[in-house]
Length: 98
Image 1 (tube, rainbow, N blue to C red):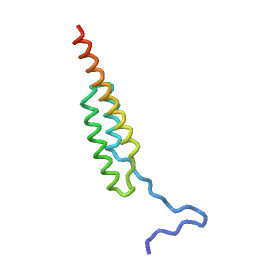
Image 2 (image 1 turned 45 degrees about the horizontal axis):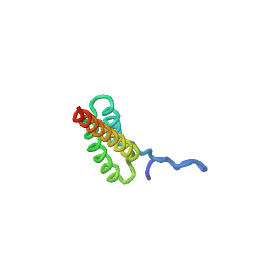
Image 3 (image 1 turned 90 degrees about the vertical axis):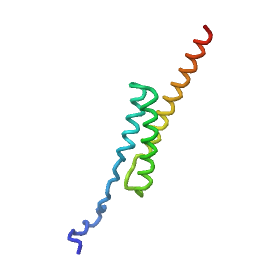
Image 4 (image 1 turned 120 degrees about the vertical axis):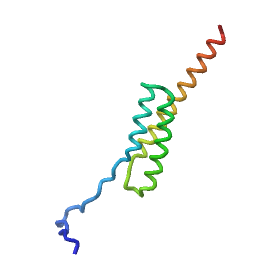
């Protein structure tokens, strides 16, 4: 015997709630912070952390969630890196034109 009574008729059995991977949350926070603090370094760290979180989520077999956060972190980080590179190229062109 398992020691716990069966659920009453008509009720749903308990479904465990999947937790969100902490690395996925950290990746998104780093990606957003890259717009405020420093454009490149937190964005690169966010890409690495998001990749690690993706592997953790895939290895959990559905027990851990957060793929959407990983994808959002990746997009925000790449957009920030692109804006930084574009701004640096524009600044270089302006300085060369002088």
